[in-house]
Image 1 (cartoon, rainbow, N blue to C red):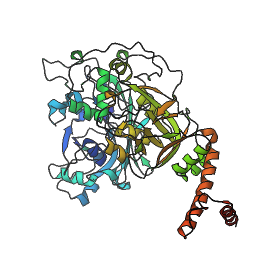
Image 2: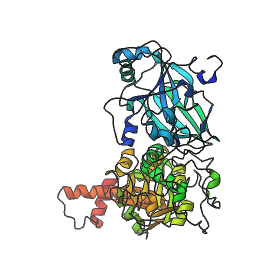
Image 3: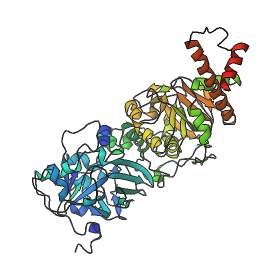
Image 4: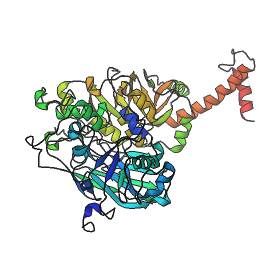
Length: 550
């Protein structure tokens, strides 16, 4: 009976059908590199429904279980051949849903998603319904968290196809009946989760909310039987689409032993020798990551190397915060003026050379959060490159107003970050990212909106040239040393490092010099010669000081 079946608690009864949209958000379409001209759909069985608080089983022998936070529409009255203008009146309520999918089974489904998305518990829904009559369907907010960390945040304003259009389109093909559910697609940010992870989805309509739909991933013990039907299989396309980017997939592949990211059996690949080198910055235990680790592989934590704990733990308090007053001063001073003041104080080697803004016009002020890469070596990458490595921990831990500074030794033959990590830093409120190495997915990174200063774009993944090694240590970036907590300022002229102890003094002096230079520029513009004026002799100095005190 439906009143005793917990799967249908949120809906009140078992729906006749669940229809899901393949691709509907612009952010997701841009991530996938394809934007459909019209919506397309697939069905999910009602037996896949689950209530908030339920567990989802990742079957034995699989690794690519991916979450997709979505907005679900519940049909209130039958709809057949309705127009977009009338379609919303047929929707009774909206709620949160998670359209889980097992990419290991996706290829053989050939688009139907019967096995990859039809498993028991693969459609959590709830926990509460929002009355559709009380809301604007174009102003719904959708968020997803993994282990308490925000990984998806979008709104229906970002849909390619408005919700009413989806309802109207489906009604052209069959009758939408009372109680039917429509899953309206997921935005960018979907990725792989592993046993132990907790995924939460919430939909908000102004002050109205569904509350968080909570699902815990657990391991399964029952494998698929090849004598009965197709078994899990992974190719490069499925791995990339499950993880969300080629960069994340390549990192995952290197950790699981699939060093070519092709889906070949790991036993066919060379097995690197374990590193005898002491690890100086410990990885977070895989089963309990600090945040939403979008590059996890789904491997058993017991199979991963256990590095020695770092004596310098990464915490959000690792670098001092800038006072609002000092930050405001530095935001008004160009890098060139700061460089001049530091030079007067004997500091010449404080510019990060060879880096340029990925987006022209970028400017930032922030305190350093450091990340160090060492040159690539196969055995070291095997022990340090996978899972929640130093690179991932740095981007997961960066705080508001901080700058991730990456030591890449000026090596531009690979990327040192890509769009997923840039999104992560932006979501954490980071002020900027500075790397003397390359940036992968450069156009997508630029579109994220966080200032990024780099030696240039490069398509190759991190592991081609680097091993992520340690965080929150002194690093060498672009020819200068940067310590955690150093103050960095960047603009069109480049990036400069300011020791915190003299930052206030340097900022005040630079502001005063800017005021003086502006006055000199006015005199030159009015026809005065430069001689004696720039720099000012005693006569001009007296005139300036006289006018400045008026």
